[in-house]
Length: 195
Image (cartoon, rainbow, N blue to C red):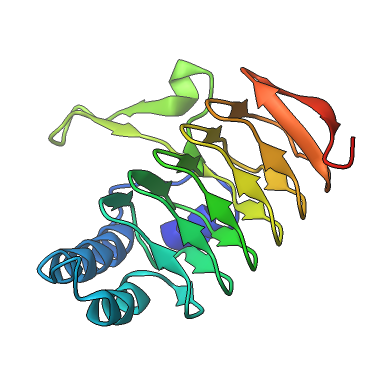
C-alpha cells in the first residue's frame, strides 16, 4: 500500500511522501492560478474553483481567501456557499452535501497525529530533517442543508447530519445527528432544529 493509499484509508502515513507532495503542489498551483482572477469576475472565478476542488457542482461558491492542503479531496454539492477564510485541511475527503451554508473562518481539519510521541515522530538521524512526522487523516462529511456557523472547527472523522446546525465558534469532535443544533467546545447537542 502506498503512503497516499494509507492516507485515504485512515492509516498512519508519511506526509512528506513524494506522491503526496506532488498532489499537494498540483492543488496549490491551481489555487495560485485562481488567485490571479479578480473577485469581481465571478464567472471566471467559479470556473477556476472547479480546477481547485475535486468536485464542485455549480453554482456552488467559495469566497476568497481560503486555504487548502490538496483541494482535490474537497467535494462540494449543489448550491453550497462557503464564506471567507475557510480552511480545508483536506488530507482526506471533505464532502459538503447540497445547499450547505458555511460561515466565515470555518476550519475543516481531516489530519491529526498519533497521541504517543514514539508513534508520532520517527527519528531518522541519517536524513534531514532528522525525523519524520506521522499523520493520520479521517474524512469529514456534511449533510444536505446543514449550516455551520462562523469560526467553527470540524475535527477529523466527523459527520454532520442533514439539516443540522453548528453554532458559531463550536469545536465539533463527534458526529452530529440530522436536524440537531450543536454548540460549544466540545460541541454538544442543544436542541432540535424544530424546537
